[in-house]
Length: 67
Image (cartoon, rainbow, N blue to C red):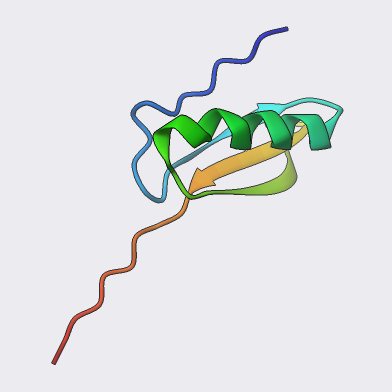
């Protein structure tokens, strides 16, 4: 089954969940899909609504204030 990753409109700090049984393969495909966008993606394994899967999220941008 082909998974469509919603990466085009993903803002820093936002994420999405992909359910599945082979977590390593989901992680690998999700991170590979983010490469053309040059996003710094992070991931967490977890359970959502009774389904096991991987939660991908874009790394939040930290802004430093000089004083």
